[in-house]
Image (cartoon, rainbow, N blue to C red; front, side, top):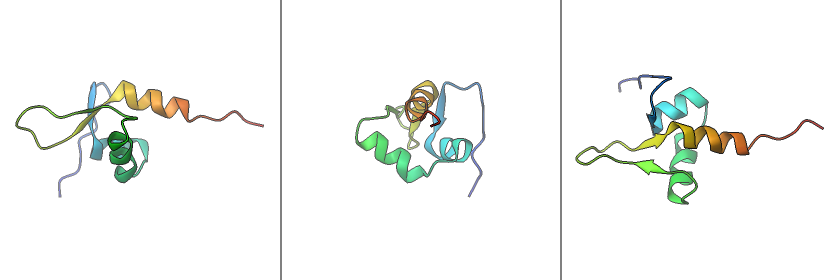
Length: 68
């Protein structure tokens, strides 16, 4: 299996690359997509599913907790 290429400036990121770059399980990302909490992009005639990087970073920001 080929390793996902990490491109920090890209607007779209594959689920596999997002899992590697952000340290999240791919299953969690697919679950967020399925529940409608994360927008997925699938270009025509392409099997791979992409995530909009800014949407993912916004979601991660909403998970932050303040220190006690």
